[in-house]
Length: 159
Image (tube, rainbow, N blue to C red; front, side, top):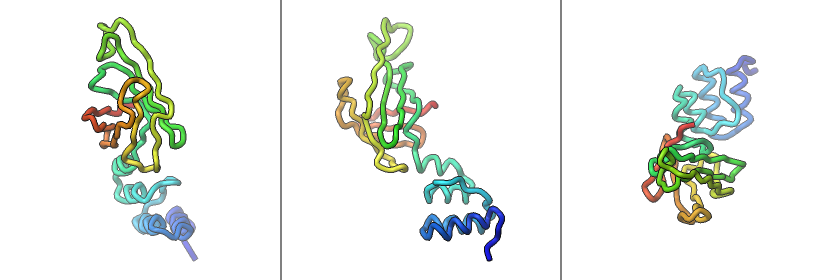
């Protein structure tokens, strides 16, 4: 007979999984963890066991959000995720390169389906900036607090 409390629920979940994730759930129950949110990866469950939620966040980047771009200070940079597809939007100041009081005009741009995420924990994407005159296949990697591009630029996540 299995315990019926919260750790017992983790034991039952672990038995259903029959995988390395299931083993981690058993360890979580043995460590006294009473709640593990559903649909977590093995890394995230391990992070819960270790009590380090930042490890879980860094392991599975959320590409969606608002970013700052040091090459275009003050200009909007945002990524919206719809399933595996990423839409990148932003603004451009005229004359540029930033969006500030010296800008006589601010132009908005949007790149629907500019990239796709191959897996929930994907650390790398390729973005097509060619519709706005940029590179077609610019590689980008998650860098803990933002996106580091192959050209050396880095967008830092701000929201």
